[in-house]
Image (cartoon, rainbow, N blue to C red; front, side):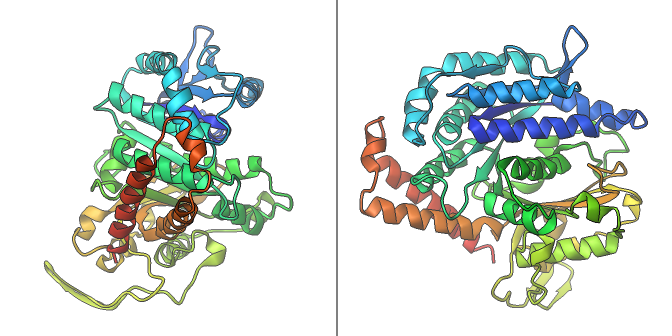
Amino acid sequence: MSIVTVQLGQCGNQVGEELFDIMCRDAQDGQRRSYNAASTEKFFHQNTHGELEARAVLIDMEPKVINHSMTKAAKSGRWKYGDSSYFCQKQGSGNNWANGYCVHGSRHREVVEELVRREVERCDRLAGLMAMMSVAGGTGSGVGTYVTQCLRDVYPNSFILNHLTWPYGTGEVIVQNYNSLLTLAHLYQLSDAILVHENDTVHRICGQLLNIKHISFSDINRVIAHQLGSVLQPALTADSQGVYSRNPLGELVGALACHPEYKLLSVCTIPQMSSSSLAYSTFSWPALLKHLRQMLISNSKMEAGIDWQVSPPAGHFSGSERLRGHKGPGFNTSLANLLILRGKDVYSAETGAFHEPALYTSWLPPEEASHVWKSPVPFDKYEKSATLVSNSQALLKPLDNMVGKAWNMFASRAYVHQYVKFGMSEEDFLDSFTSLEQVISSYSQLG
């Protein structure tokens, strides 16, 4: 089954290009036919010249990034974007969500819907749609939200996953908290699941784990693409009978977003290290899974920051009765987790520690909250690797901080007139605050 990706704005297009590149490189080993065929069908189709074309639509209000992404893909010699699978204009959205949503989005709806329709019709079987965007600027957030609304209207029964890049906490754009607030509040009504990468976390991975001295956005995009690829490449579920033919988005949503109030997904991957360090490293499944589990519990987000002092509460479990101890400060309670293991001896990996009831909220049985996918095929240079996609309290703090900063600005009406002039009202802001405060309350109560 195939995924149609919609790349929106500078960030969405740059991350999307890195993702397709890593997918194509990973699926070129001729000894893995069923895996490679499943990967290629999911993300590419062959044009009349036999070339691999990404199942993607590129959208930006300025042409520079799209031109660069298309040229870079073509120069790889492995794959390319379709010659007419993009839309751009000469004027951006000015880092203003309202300009992107109310002006550019509605103005160009028909042409964008037609581009997506053409990509969908090239799929034998549509698994779903994935929109990739940043929440800080105007095009990714505003146009991205409008396009997601169009996708939901046109494909009401299809799975829609939004991949969001969260801005640096220190600030990239003065109104990034407004843009983030409005994006998330609207997407919560439209998307089946929202997968988030935080720039601050990825930046630390680049510096502390990959030993990159001068970190660029290209470095950050490659790390995000690596983690996304480790989630989206083919894997086997317990009942797949060795066939890579499942619906990746459908099973991801079904496993993790089982309640409409909880749609925020975070990702962490282990190991992540520089090529020079990798040459002298060996990995065992018990060690990898021990570290990944503690990263989940303590919400460390990367191996170098694990807090080993945080532990699950003691409890006695008998039949359907579940008595739980108190979860101390810093404990990250999960609604649901998906563990994805790739590489050598993967079927010998013992994953029982991720099924423990103490990791989860009390109202969902652990057997329904914990899921494992496996593939014996190594991914992106690592002989063994483990990825955890988690619907947990991991994003509660950055979400709460963002809403708090946006409210402080709104209370003094800072920059509100810049949004009102493009068709928004103060009531639209208040509705968004109400929506996200409910989300914060729901995630706070998981513990």
